[in-house]
Length: 154
Image 1 (cartoon, rainbow, N blue to C red):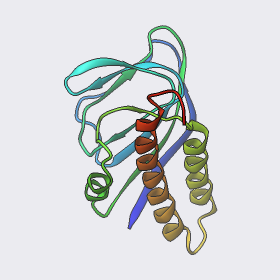
Image 2: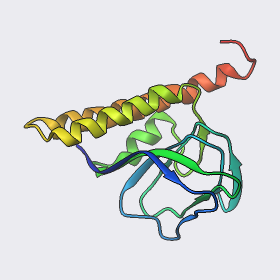
Image 3: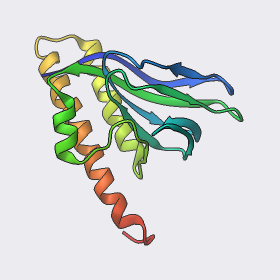
Image 4: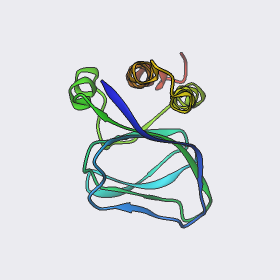
């Protein structure tokens, strides 16, 4: 079962604010960046476009910022059964940003997870587990769809 540790929605950072976690954290983190920013990825700083997503594994270095403008992101922080196995099975890269064509759908899924966490009903843990898995499967579909978008037609 996946357990939600923390969530953030439309979290705003002022321009120049740097997130720098050299040792990462002890949970998996899914972030949806709503503006372009600079991100540490595969040993170098890269510029990623708006509506990009990344899944950080446990203890992975996290470094991102935007020097030119404010930026916002949604995030789901979770732990539990080995997420790496599911992510690998679905072909979702860890610690590597990828564009999200339908960022609103991904954001809505994150908002649903946050809403269920606030409810704290008897079955909320099971529902949150399913919602996190739904988010992961949606991201897998987003990655597959991205291959069809290269021509500009879908």
